[in-house]
Length: 76
Image (cartoon, rainbow, N blue to C red; front, side, top):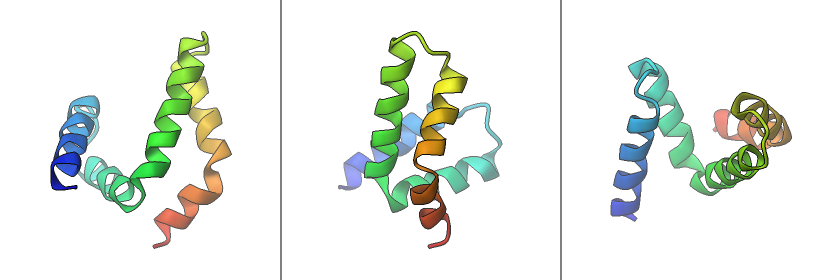
């Protein structure tokens, strides 16, 4: 599991290179709490964008769908 966490963190750093360091660390902490949920969210966003939906819209819609799960993670 250590290598998977390392690869995930490196990929996220690359994807979020324009995000301030403090926010990046917050997001990384959330992802490490429930990586399967974020994998599911990422796959759904990717599927919607490949279907022609703008990335921002797809992301917002998927995040709304998983709002309760995300709120639960944030309160842990």
